[in-house]
Length: 328
Image 1 (spheres, rainbow, N blue to C red):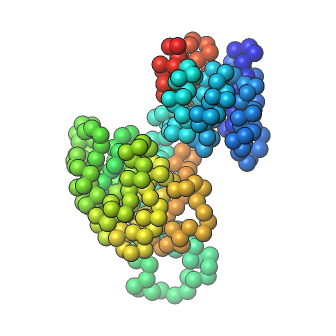
Image 2: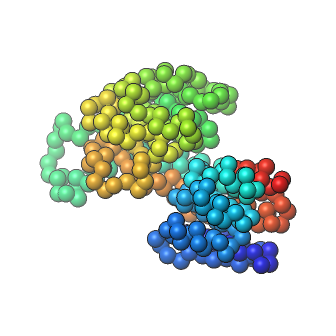
Image 3: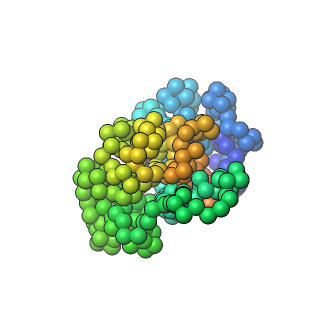
């Protein structure tokens, strides 16, 4: 790896830089808490051979063409919709990512948001800070029960499976789901039932989104969908903020079309602190921290570093989005 330079666009866990340096790479680490600007990243990449980036870095066609000399791009994330994959492939630049490491951490966040929303935990915590905890009010701040309710999963992959398993174990919830294809394991082990999208949104007491962001899922959860959901239902999104229309979600909550929402992803990100969702008693919002455990982040940085190391060492990449780029 002698002579090969890797640009790290964030303050990633130190394990990543250590692995790259031990393998012989020259590593440039962005040392500031505030991220690089697009222009700073574009200019810095010009003097490097490999880019180690994350989901909030915009690696569009213009960026890639301006840095067509790059040998490899390795993403510190499971998703990669921030990268123009067709352009990278056209220029024979393989793109790595870090799949299958966020499963438990993200499922925990989805489950936690469901529980917090059902009992208005975020809102009630803020009410204490405001000095509003005064005396017992028998009819105030009432939540809803989750036991024996129906959980709908949109995108029942690894994370959706773990979310469903947690909900069954804790609350004996009935699981229905909608996927591009059936999930025999979920049907066998969780007694999950495959249903149409229409039935999913109409029958779910809790609807948890775990899909990838595609042209078909972008903005899918909009006014028309929320209007068909149960008035006592909870909408959970830990996938991508662009999957839901936030204006329509706000309206659905304000008009009582749905009961509550738990979000780890928003549209846009970061969320405006004046967003009305943050003041609603039946809404819980977190700042996109689904992978936020020490173990998960260390595993992510390890996979991202190894994608670069293995590419240079063996002309292969353990986790490539576009393996065809390596062949050329």
